[in-house]
Image (cartoon, rainbow, N blue to C red):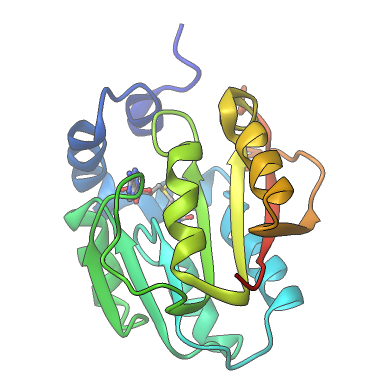
Length: 210
Ligand SMILES: C[S@@+](CC[C@H](N)C(=O)[O-])C[C@H]1O[C@@H](n2cnc3c(N)ncnc32)[C@H](O)[C@@H]1O
């Protein structure tokens, strides 16, 4: 049986990036209202972690898997005025664009090469993206490459992804002194209003000088 029903269940069971993008394109116009109904917590927790580890005004930032831009509006309020958005779904980015919260929006897929220079971003945030059927450990290396030394990467990671190679990859990256773990939250449920949500954790990586 599917872990979730409706739009969420469909995206968790999507087979491949194109299907994920198409499902989010269709969901975009009602995403904010539905996630609010579920009591969606990842953006608030991600934002709190970012603000704890990255000085106000740090720029530029990347919202990776920005979706409809839930975080973009809050980032500006919290003193991070220069943020770019990246997402695989044009439909989600169209909603994000309408909020005028991002300096640039990029339709791109995490998990492959990204067209940004080494160390370009002062910080990166990605909430609700390292999750079932979306992005796994294969998305990490490029985010680390494009984040500057002493920069911060804030991720939420679903337990299933964590156990399927993500934790092992983090261990390797720490051992190779590419990143250190600045903070890791205990597992929490990202959508208290949705039955059977698998817990996730918040993770803050510090990119080390290379
Ligand atoms: C649950 S939503 C989270 C959106 C936003 N970060 C938030 O917290 O509301 C997941 C987002 O990840 C995007 N996504 C899924 N796979 C992706 C990939 N490989 N590359 C970039 N974005 C992806 C989807 O299009 C969707 O907008």
